[in-house]
Length: 371
Ligand SMILES: NC(=O)c1ccc[n+]([C@@H]2O[C@H](COP(=O)([O-])OP(=O)(O)OC[C@H]3O[C@@H](n4cnc5c(N)ncnc54)[C@H](OP(=O)(O)O)[C@@H]3O)[C@@H](O)[C@H]2O)c1
Ligand SMILES: [Zn+2]
Image 1: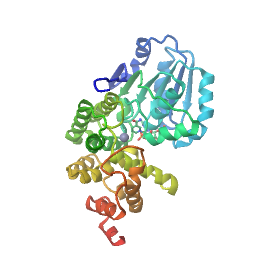
Image 2: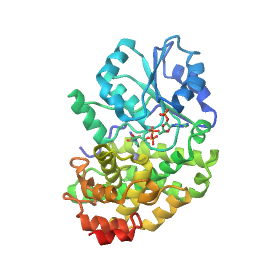
Image 3: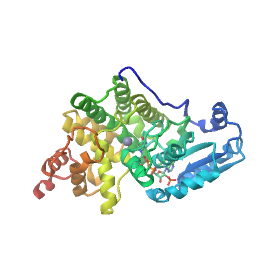
Image 4: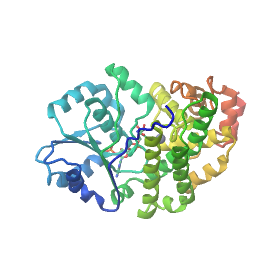
């Protein structure tokens, strides 16, 4: 009903260098006394960060801390039932996610399925999932199919974005984060289109916040590309802003459009054909270049911003063969049910996909001969 708005947001967002040390205070402020903790983390670098940086702090306010390490591919999903019964056995009062987008998604999934509160401690700036109360739509559908149960994802209780830790992540994660941010230019265009053509609900405020965050990143691309504390802080602020826009809209619309469908299509094809996908944000950035051209907006400017931070702008830099790029373009519209974008209901033809990818420099022009 128009005028009714329910916004799910974190109560505390701490962002700055060295702020991880505030964890005990935040847990206390949230009202937990000696909680049973389950820390969800990755299996390499983020496990090390958990051991070296987070456990010494959590030991100050909990005598009952378990660590659950999620491996680097999606294989934890195959063990989802087993992991859920393990977590139920631990009976935690609170989850803490320490890691990149995959780990924070896993934390949201456990929280959503077991109805447990959680705190997010992002360790990189490669995605805008830190503050958002959503996971990607194909992942959500997959889990609901595996478990045959709907899942309600809640916002984190708190976010602690320690810029020192985030800035120490590989440079590639910073450029991926910029890719996930330039995606907002096309995502909001797609959303407006869905509003005009399908009468979908549209929030001017969420759209403006999303675009403002993307513009901030575009304007400060040079400093962000340097990878220091200042640039990382700008990027993290914008990524959190995007997550807040999702919270305000109550859907991923302000952050995810046809460029995200293209990235989901590459992930899907990589699973079926056995090639290695690039990072989520890198794929979305290249998708944004092409979808911007379809929307008739300045795709060259998006390309410039990506280049300024050293992000991939073509198939070769993504490490993905041109044929997968073309096929992903033709199936992208099928990646999310009832999600209207510039790709329309039947998607784009193969020849249009080749032309689009060649004209935006994403694949070599020699590919036109293969039509
Ligand atoms: N929910 C949402 O709204 C949303 C939005 C965007 C993206 N996503 C999801 O997020 C995922 C992509 O996230 P991602 O790009 O961050 O990939 P990722 O797979 O979570 O992380 C990539 C790699 O970076 C490592 N890493 C993280 N922090 C580090 C640090 N400080 N130092 C060194 N290495 C570090 C991780 O180590 P480990 O091996 O220890 O993990 C991992 O190997 C996708 O699954 C995507 O669907 C979700
Ligand atoms: Zn994204």
